[in-house]
Length: 293
Image (cartoon, rainbow, N blue to C red; front, side, top):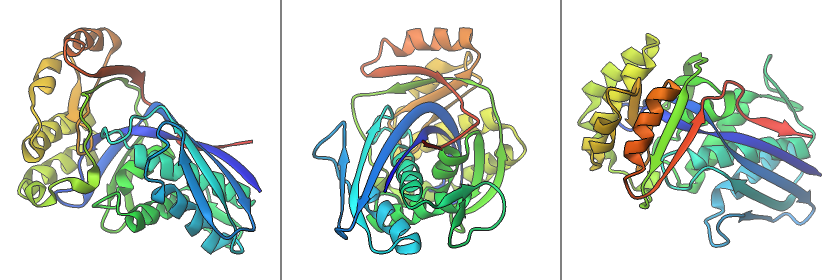
């Protein structure tokens, strides 16, 4: 009973902490999960990049899949990732999605893009929701992060209501993407949600822009507003403008993500590389998470 799958990291269009409505877009940076099920009844997790990492999320993903589709199996889950942890690039959502799909594969549960989920079939959105509930169980997210998880699972850009785990819109985009990640790390569960609710009216405006398909404008407004609310400098975003089509603080930080054409982002990269930390040049992905044979 073995399964393997991968899921994507993502960047932020709208942070859901203010109102519960969020938006994110998938980027070409992957997390991979391998699941081996057995009859032990105990799930054990491991993260390739960090032997001491908290594995409750991926373990809970396996447990939730087994509770619904299995027969009390235990086993092991191992993840490896190109998505930096605690950097605002949706590493938790990617790990959850990859683990859920790998576990479903190990249980011989078909993941179907059409129709309704039943005891032998699950839709991609329902698989995504299993990971979101596991994230809530594990306490790694404030909102449930359905926006991040849906972008990672489905690809493209999504707009969601995280209060209802409802997909409001999905679109495909074709952007070059540049990410700057400082040496510091920030955990989503530690974010000051109360401060974010003070900018709810700005978040409503960003949601309107996103639902109108004006994603790059939306992410730039989001970036400046949430940098202020969460206590991050807006200087990296200012450095990206006017070259970038859009730039935002990603998630609850600390990464900043910019989108636009390749030549423009090369100019941004030269500025950002003068800062401590790392830059990643990548692109968007329309295809989302997938199971590997």
